[in-house]
Image 1 (cartoon, one colour):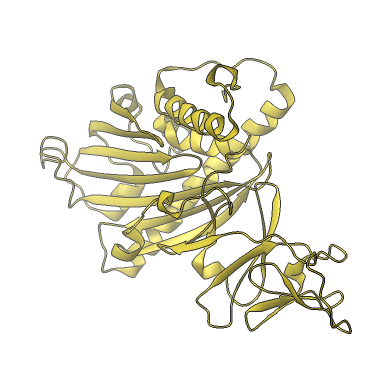
Image 2: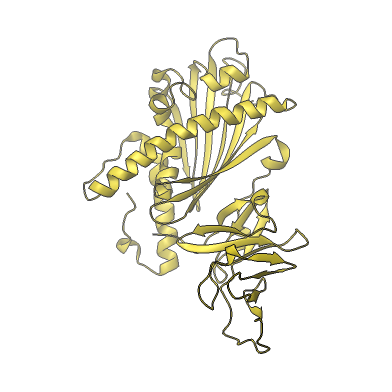
Length: 348
C-alpha cells in the first residue's frame, strides 16, 4: 500500500545526466534525464506511446528524448513533438510526465495532481558537512527498512563489530519519543557506555562515552539521523553540548520500487574530522559495512514474511517509534483515499 500524495527520493542529483536513467518507483517505470543546459531534470513514463519501447533506451538531444525504435521525439511535458515521415502529430501521442524537484543534492519526484513542493524535507547538511552517498536496491518491502532504522536495539546483535556498544547499555538506554503530524521524532541516550568500533576508530576517547541517536521519520519514507558521542562528563547529555567528540549525520531516502523491492538512497556526513577527506571515506566504508549487515537481515526477514505472512507478529517495548511511524503513514493513506480511519488495514 503506497501513499501517492507525497514526494519520494528518486535519485541523487549526480546520478542523472544527459544519458537516460531508468528507474522503477512505486511500480511505475520512469526515465530521467537532464536537458542540454544541465539544469533541468525531466521525468517521463518510460514507455513510448507507439509500441511500448522503453524511452530510457533512447537518446537525449537538446531538451527532448528520442525513442530508438521508430524515432518519435518527446519533450519534457511528455508530448510527442516529432514523428519521422509524418508531419501531423496526434494530440494523443504523449506519455505521462512527473514533477521533479532538485534540492540538497537529491532528486525528488511527486504526483502532478497531489504533491506540494513545500512538503519536501529540508536537509542542509549536504552543504555543511563533508559527505558521501550511495544508492542500493534491496529485495524487501520498503516499510521494513524504516522499521529497522527506527528500532536501534538491533545494533547490539546485528552490528557487533561496527555500531554496537556493550549490550547492557541498550537495556538501560533512555528513550524520548515525540509523535509529529508527519511521523515521529525520538532521541535515544546510552550513558556511560563503551564507544562502538566505528566511533573508537574515528576519535580517540578517554574511556567511556555518553552516546546519542536522534532520528526523525517523515512519512512515507524519509529518515534523518544525528548520532554521536562525547566523553562522559563533557556535557553532551547534561547541557546538550554535542559539538566535539564523534558525530555523524545520515540521510535515508527509502522509496518503493515494487511491493517486494526497494530503493535505499543514503548519505553519511562526517562531523568530527571534517578537514580530513580520508576520515569521511573511512566513515562511509564502516557505515556501508553496517548497512550490508542490515540488508542480510532484511532480505531474510522479508523472505520469511512472504512465506508465513498470515501468522501474527507481536510488538515489544522497543517498537514504540516504529509504531508511531506506521500510524502516521496509515493516517495519511486514509486521508488520501477517503477511507474512514477504522477501516484502514493496520500496517503491522
